Length: 256
Length: 258
Image 1 (tube, each protein chain N blue to C red):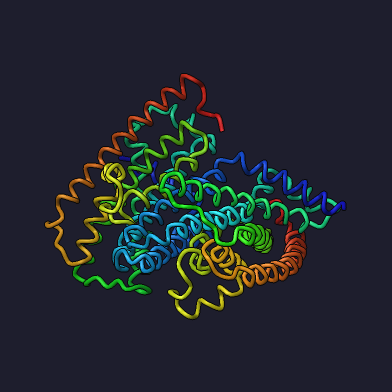
Image 2 (tube, each protein chain N blue to C red):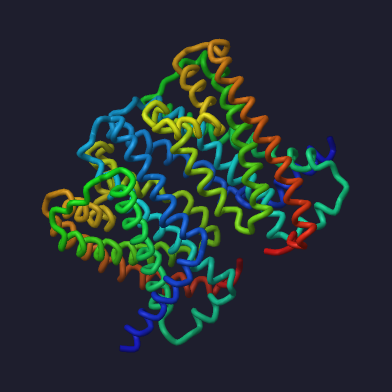
């Protein structure tokens, strides 16, 4: 019960804090709208009108990754700048249980992206919002956000040691969009990329969301995304403990 | 001249905090390279144009990583580092002061852009003739300069509004939409074409695409002229904004607010 309360309070606090930051308003709303518009005109110019809902949906999913990336990558750095990283690490609960709700909040902020691109597509471009499996669509979104939050835990944990986390965040936005097939089908990518995409939970989450919205079986994607999220959680906890210990030994925890 | 060169150099060394290889490689080289690849694959999927269209468009646009973000950091960054008030208290020529800050980013933007072209050449179906490279370099250098002028406007706005990235981020990404980087201008609504024609890079990218296909520099002189004129307008706008915001900051005593 205490752990559930800790997770809920940290998640809610981080969510409120992020919604007030200009950077997250941009990454979760403005940037996805720019990409949704770009994808709309691009697909329209390529005479692929059947893919317009796909474009709006994919732009929203891209936004979820961007929010997760900058939120998780920045979580530890923000704590460093605010001078609260050391007290948080020294507090009684395991640090993984403090970091995870923060990365989950970053992924949750991505819901704004999805909502804004779908509403934008409907209102501005008149794209009909007809989802083939609405219940599975909702479930697949929740599962994808949880799996991204756990991926963020692994990523954020590695940034305990790497102080230039922002640089990695700047770099990782496009490659994950490519590798997970969020908007470009994996079949168009070189074969050697496929195994890499299979071990990424967002690949399966995105696939489940696309299938639930546009037609297809979403359940295998949901199941695999959940399974991978569980594996990431175990890895994330171990990584947090290992990196926290190294940072304490090298006295680099609070270095900005 | 001393303020222009030395001031620009020291500003770059002091304020451009992405110059360490641990920042520079992921942010200024790897990130833009992945942008080129992403849009080339998106282009293949959308069946709009070939790889060369996306490589040229994005390789020129990624110069904005330096031209927009770099300039925003070094000009807008004066506020965070609390050097803005002492800087504006000096009698130094403002034109030399701020144009000097733009110079390192023009060079940097050119390097970023060249790396984007190299990635396109190595990994995608983009094979311009060797003879086109010098002329392509001239167009890219001009485009990088106009993009940096645009970045100076963003940096100037960063002196007025406290978080410069709130302006720099949309500025960079809107270029992807309006400047014909990934969508042919003809496929956009009229109002977007009008906006795009007044933005940096639009004419430079169009010229670079033709030059990459073998056209001579003289055959795209109209596009080059427009790009240069737009760049001059942005430099002038940046100068005016910097002076206005300087005067306003003094009057309202807001120069040191972070």
